[in-house]
Length: 187
Image (tube, helix red, strand yellow):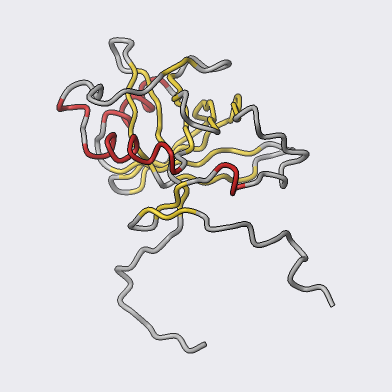
């Protein structure tokens, strides 16, 4: 394969899509799509969910104010909901023009989307400001998963069953499961 150099304005960084749920000051829920989501290892056996938010959106302000949020994985079935949340802003009023069901977290008092197959309930441990972005390092207090999933260990998550939306400037999905670690170097 031959490669060529391009202008460093390209930021193709494949990211899973999440809808972040927060509590507004009046107790109502707020949801917004965020794709700058990852994890990092913490001391011991723990992991921190890492999420970055740009600008001054209400979701970011709610996380700063409360220190908690839910991260609801977006699959292809709820992509229209993510797209709706991304085009309707909190400053324009309630985001209730299309139907969706909301519950509360099991451990953290945050709104969760009933349609999401994988939900993290998070508490901010620390944050870092970089320009107009804030990166939150968060303790995962609980994970709710679709009851049809039954992983045996942390590496046994069938992404094809979750059918996540992947974002890199455009929405993508997984086509099929290609194999496991070691499947491609066997003699």
